[in-house]
Length: 235
Image (cartoon, rainbow, N blue to C red; front, top):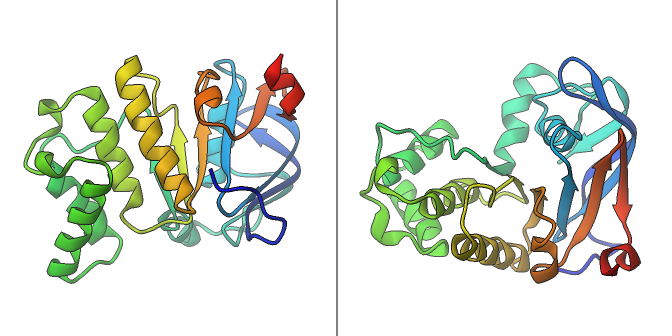
């Protein structure tokens, strides 16, 4: 994990923010600063506000109270046409994969590149090859999603998130549907990505991951959001 550096770039900043789930407020007084190269865990029980915070970071949920800035975009002032620009700057790993079932792996990745402005076919093919190598899935380029295991699908999702070389990866419960062996494989890939300098935020209820892959932990609990200290982690 890349170490926190007070001189590194601030990618995400929330100050006294209230987070809503689209209908109701679920977290109050959220203060968070994420710098370049950090590994961040956001933990808590189901319904505690983890996913709502993630959706606020991606501007899927609006920020109506407090201050929030993500990758240079003010969440209180962001316009609809700016949201795709913001999301292009980050890679998102979904719990339920969200792969196109009627396209093979290569076509799934090419679809993203075409959608984000890659017009050169040779450049697209080269980038697809690069990200598949990073996640150890080069041999699966011709496979359709239904032909892949859960762990393989998640590795393809990570490859997809890396396509545009984002500064930030946001992974929502990336190991929730995986067995122990595939959890370790996916977490090692994520750890390697983070070690290369990419900031990673993991939304998870599996706090056991933090022991093997240490990072800063923030807990959503009882409508509050706070950082867990090292002393608390060791208890």
